[in-house]
Amino acid sequence: MEGSRAADLCNGDETASAWENHIILGKSTVFVFKHDGTLLKSATGNDLEDVIVSNDKSTLTATIKIDDPYLLNLKQAVVDIAIVANVDFTEQLTPGTTTIDDIADMITQFTVPTVNDDNSGIPMWGYRGTVYLGYLAGDGSKASPLQCGTINMLRAWAKINVLTGSLPTGYRVTTTTFNTPNESFYTAPYDVLKIYARNTENITAPCPTNPSESLTTFNSATTSEGVVTFYAPETGNSDDDHYIQLSLQAPDGTAVEDKQNIRIPVCLYDEAGKPKPNSKLDLIRNHIYSFELQYDANAEITLKVRVKKWGYHKIVFDM
Image 1 (cartoon, rainbow, N blue to C red):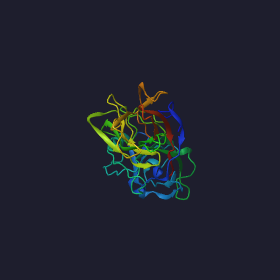
Image 2 (image 1 turned 90 degrees about the horizontal axis):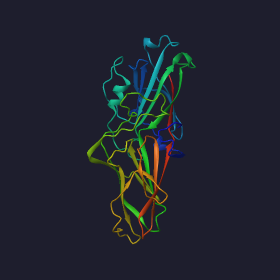
Image 3 (image 1 turned 120 degrees about the vertical axis):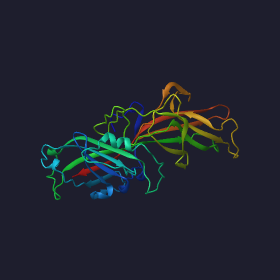
Image 4 (image 1 turned 60 degrees about the vertical axis):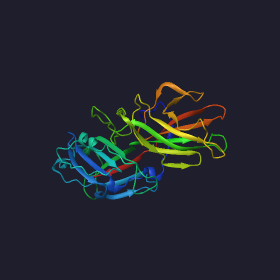
């Protein structure tokens, strides 16, 4: 995923699990737009034809059927394609009137996904603009559909790992939460200017920052040996920091008295494990943030942080 907003912080890529790649067809919608930005055709995932999903769920291939005079002259037709996955989309759409901006504004609500549940998935957005149909292989028939190519689906959420394997033997973290002052989240890349990346390999729009007086709290999604994992929507870090909150338990099962409800800022840390000044991190879609806890019983909790790009889902489209 070249050219990501966090490229300067990233240390390699990390592949996704089958569930993190999972696209629920019944909760996914394909939008095809004329090049003037108005809607030409929409279809739910269940309306797609010839659907093939790879074993690891990282690639989906499908065909969408479009009957419209706009496409009669295929050599001159130009379309834009957007896909929203794992989102219940029930809004009323009007071909020739509804725009991609309208649709982006319709998908700001969120539901926390249930990990490893095939009926629940991480919201995703994919966009490919300026598809010249006259240059594509195929003739648009059932036997030889137009091969529109690959659309990269970026998860609209980030993944946060709290790594606890470096804690002294017997120590463990409890009651871990991620907290943000933001209250609105965006499945489409947020951009107040309504200018979307022409290919979702490259996300250039800023993260949204919309703080409120109350916090939005996310509980940990999974806890395994040495790792506590959260999933949270893309969100900008405002003046009211978002943070991880946790408590520490001693080997005998008692709470470490001065290490309860500690707030860990989402930022960069120096070699001593202390927060760097003016280094707050946005939570960028489709990125993984890992915070490694280190603790000396005679000192403070210190941290190391690293950010990775998250392997993205691919959809290959014919029409």
